[in-house]
Image (cartoon, rainbow, N blue to C red):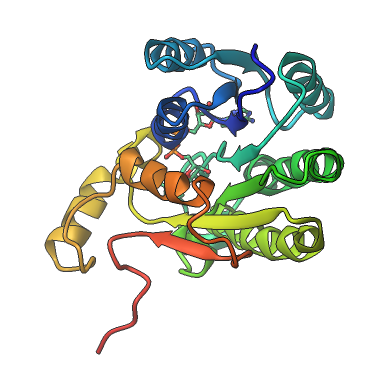
Length: 257
Ligand code: NAI
């Protein structure tokens, strides 16, 4: 791997939003480390290489502390630098069910994957980014968290997911404040209803919701919509902002009468 090239780490890059983020960063000239528990991430690696980028798949279940450690070691040994961390890997509840029937096991699984693991991954990477920024002040490292409209919109059939994403939003604020004096920006993207494997189970429900006027921009979002927002952030279009939330949701977040 070429150590002069800017490097990005994207978690959950085997498919969906993470795959598209990887591809857009590949086009932007980043060297990529793609972490996922699914071997299909190799296909994303091939797609990134076809776009001229250097890319490597790092098999990693982010809920495993040792695998997170190995991931950081792999990036460090590979290019010796990390400019962008995208915390994208995430899961939904096993089955949408009423708030009064949430099982502890599912709660723990979702909170562990969506909040606890990215928190501790970010903690380690933040310390490393601080060292890099001190050694190379001209670099502009940044961290992007993929939260969700459920960070603020209560959906009583996927309570653990909502709680995890609310936590991710606070995590953005916490790391943004802690890292700002070191010149490291932390941003959050809140996707709305995006067509991926994650939303397959609720496709009819969301089709109906959109058809009935639920979104100001009346269509499903795409992974490319989210990736475009990542691109704007990594290009440094918000140089005097941190902790900023970018809604990629067809305007869902606006209140209306
Ligand atoms: P997806 O299910 O298509 O992809 C998620 C990826 O994360 C998969 O490749 C999966 O293998 C990986 N992953 C899950 N658990 C992992 C673990 N423990 N270790 C490593 N990798 C793991 O989902 P999608 O839609 O692409 O979601 C990406 C992110 O966007 C998630 O954080 C999700 O919560 C968020 N999001 C998605 C929305 C949507 O409508 N699809 C809306 C709002 C947020």
